[in-house]
Amino acid sequence: MIAFHFPPAAMGSGHLRTLGFARHLPAFGWDPVVLSARALAYPRTAPIAAQLIPEGCVTHRALAFDARRHFGIGGKYPGFLAQPDRWSSWWPAAVVQGMRLIRRHQVCAIWSTYPIMTAHCIARTLSRITMLPWVADFRDPVASSVEAENPYAVASQQRWERRVLRDASRVVVTTPGALRAFAGSYPAAHAEGRLAVIENGYDEIAFNGLPEPPSQPGRPLVLVHSGLLYTDGRNPAPFFAALARLQANGTLGAADVHVVLRASGSEAMYTREIERLGLGEMVTLAPPASNREALEEQARADALLLFQGPRFDRQIPAKLYEYLRIGRPIFALVGEHGDTAAVLRSTDSAEPVPIDDVDAIATRLPAFVRAVREGRAPVARRQAVMGYARSAGAARLAGMLDGAAATPENMFRESTDVTPSQP
Image (tube, rainbow, N blue to C red):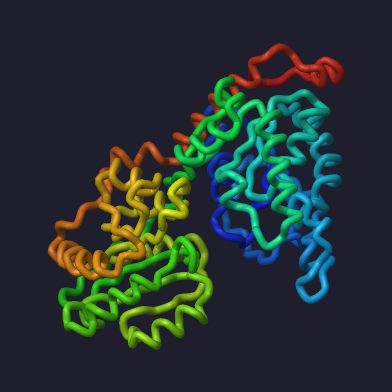
């Protein structure tokens, strides 16, 4: 399992997908060996909590540098060092270490995960040398993930996307929209049945012992959003404008609701807007927190906020699955025709509200608040949510690995006399 984002990396929630698969794959006959990067490559690190890395998960790290931090001056660095991304230095050492791990552990298949394209480069190199089957976990297509600020990286990643779609045994994405996009761009891969969806999902173990919302009649309801907001696609400005209108006309105020935006990014910009609209008593911008702390905050909340505009219709934020499992009502400011809205409808958890329609938000938010206070706001059906557990996703991944590895013996195994312990 080749994954750049792995503890102690403190860079979003991407590592949770790898951890979830590593935790649950052994139940389906596959033992994970994780190849990641050394901690110096990560912009931020955090202590590894007890039992975070599953027991029995073999973890190795190869030398890697961040071109921006280690080779740049004032944040500027030569563009060719970011092909396909800022961590391309990881590639040579990881291939050398990967070959050792393949021999030592009698590896039967390779899995790699995006959005660090170098992970796919390493996996492709190892697969070509050893002839081992390779499952490429793209999560999102390159077009929706790559940093447009570096034209070298954009062009390089687009080339690598084509190579991966051509060479990988299976290619996995996280949403039906991403699958349709790949099927349209790579009809051969689609026709060969090499494209599949495994949703981000949630890990049941993370929800043990979470608190309940405090029962204090008459207090303001707490509405929480966890994660980054963007000026393009996840812009909270229309929501702020609707709140200001409701406050001005006396419909909702600080005595009714308190909004917490946790780890939203661009805090300086949002602070100016909050102050301009006089929302300081209604809206709090909170700093980043650990995943466990974020889950506890969501569990204590009366309701949850989701921002996911039409630009991201082919993506589903990983936090949505946490929201669904938490079981709180959701006020969903999402694209009506996107994959996020489809999941919300399929679980009966929310109806989308247009993210940029101030009138619609100002009309529907008071009704939502009343429904939450009266205990009649919809929450996700537990039976529907269970299908998004990472154990279910691991079962689907194990099926792909079984199918890919059930091919005639490859040249690497014959030349090294390796006998796998599973098919």
